[in-house]
Image (cartoon, rainbow, N blue to C red; front, side, top):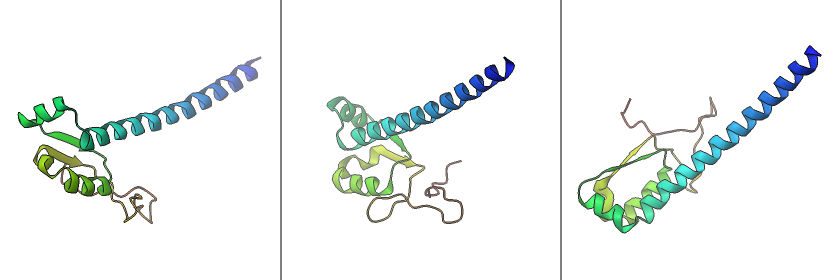
Length: 111
């Protein structure tokens, strides 16, 4: 009887862990999508608060998207700050560290 309970707990924990990873990924994608919308399709309210001096800190954006923002949103650039920028190649694909396999980020000097 104990063995079945332990097996059930292990299976349950594994399923919970996998669904938590999926939720984290979905959450990360949602956050990135929200930041893209704020960056490229700001609401009139967003423009008002930026005009009053609010600076938006964008975290983990792809360098290709930031380059595009500098071109398309030039009049708003002074209201933007980018941290943990993911380095991308010419196609916008994140660059990977060949030794660790981790995504490469720019050193923004913020600790």
